[in-house]
Every structure is written in C-alpha cells, then in structure tokens.
Image (tube, rainbow, N blue to C red; front, side, top):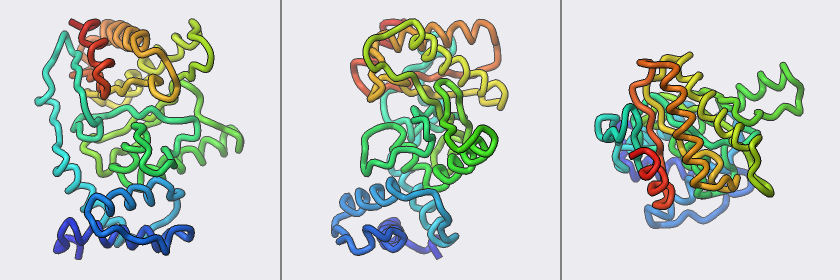
Length: 268
C-alpha cells in the first residue's frame, strides 16, 4: 500500500500512528503544515520506548525515511575529498553520509536521546534510522544486563555495533565518550583516545572500510574542542600506521565552523 502513497500521505499516516501508539500524546493536535508534522513525528519517535510496532507502520516509516534521506541529499564517499592520506573532513549532517559506518556519541544507557527534537547527534541518528535502531540497542543492552547484572551501563570507550536501518550508512557504531565535569585530566584524554582506537578496531573486525567520526564528547560532555581534535587525529594516524591498508577512508565529521577550523589546521 505505501508504495502508492505520496510522501505527504506517509507523513500524515505516521503522525496518526505514533499518536495512537502514545497514551500521553494520542490527543495532541496535529499541525497543518509539513514542517509542523515533521516536528511532531520526530518528537513522538524520540520519546517512544522500544517496543513492538506493526509491520504496516514500519513499512510506511521505512519508505518515508528512505525518501527523506533522498530529499536531504545522500553524500557518497566519492563526494568527499581526501585531505591527507586516508583522512577527510566533512561538515554537515552525519545522517546524510553513505559510508560503511557512522559513529554516534551515545550515553551509557545506549537507547538514544529521549528529548523531543533535541539537536544532539544521538537524537538525529535515531530519528532518521527509525524506531528499529532503539529496539536493537535495547536488545543488545538486555543481553548485556543478563550477563553483567541489571545495573549494567555501557562503559566509556566500549563501542556497540548496530545496523543503520534507514540511514544511508550501513552501520552505526555507538560509543560513550568521557565526560569532563571539572577539569581535563590525562585519564579523560586517554579515554577519548580509546574511543577512536576501539572504534577502528571494531571496524577492522567487521570489515568496515569507511567510517565517519563525529566530534566525540565535545558537546554536552564538555571536552575542549581543540584538544579533542588533536587527540582524534593523533590516535587515528597511529592506528592507521599500525594497520596499513585496512581502511579506505576515515572521515572527521564536523558540524561547527570552529571544529572545522581546528581539524583543517591539524591535518593540512
């Protein structure tokens, strides 16, 4: 059925389906404009706990998100210039990248961001991947809690691999970066370096040849941006020297102009 639906019809159907699925917001008024409908759909997806959903709704969601990816513009690896060696810098929305894996700055619960319309990368990745991503993260965390206890939370710098679902990227690597609460310490710097090293090890183990790193820990985790960029580049370069020929490309995905400036200065 959804193959015959227009994108606007899919959007309207999804808004109503996710409203019906929500006890708290089932009677919320639906905006009339497209952007308003997109905002309420994203918000309802953001707050939804991982649980079963009908195959029909999933089918419409998948078709809608695949089309949204095309509308936003899918960026192929060949579209991203190499700056030096196997390193690239790309500024923009990481959910547009068609690479083997993108890196998500996750929290220790590993279920994504539940704040409606939050601007963090965790929220964006879960939104445009679809509700299957939170469900898979929940399944993996459930298995880990069976093994390590019900209080288990994902440790810093231990990556988790999932499918990309409706993202252009094949896979998502979720990793918890260090939190800088007071001052930067050597231990926190080592933890950030481990995030990059362990992620690349995971890529190697799973034959993932291209990966796009976000600026791990530099948002609400308060890691200083310039020092984070230095650690990221130094760690990746050391890893590539020890594993020649294993990666096709490592992309540093930046969103802020300030981060772009730091990466360009350090790589060129």
